[in-house]
Image (cartoon, rainbow, N blue to C red; front, side, top):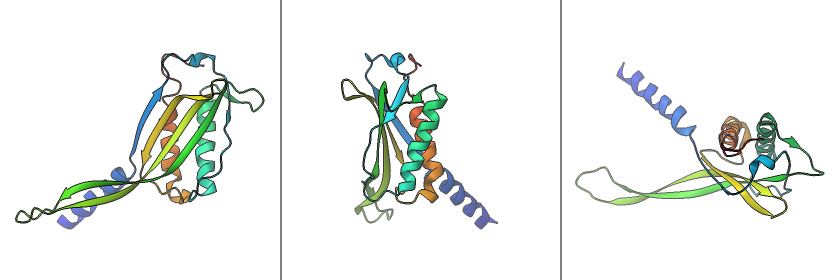
Length: 167
């Protein structure tokens, strides 16, 4: 009986702990986001180790969200560009060993993927809005992580444009 509770607790932790997305956004407060209406993607090469389908998930989800917000894709005359960066970073944390008689510390490493979406002013050629999401996803495995990637893109773009301005 107790075993089932432990297994349930571990499964609950795995579902909620591994599906986390932490986001942060930043923008140029003096920029007139209300003037934006059309966009296009900045062309970039697929980063090494990133599955082409992962790129499709990022771009496709962002296109959907931007169009739901009233923006339209227009390669001929965009009022802003969108760019993405996606890759893995290693993080290390110092941990104390749990034995009370041994005060040994060790480094514990983990890998976290970072997705960054930038909105770029084409005239100034600089980012005017940037969102960053840390996700527990392997950039090379889109089939396993597609729902998490879509969630990260949606959470990031929920903050675009900043609340005081909208199309």
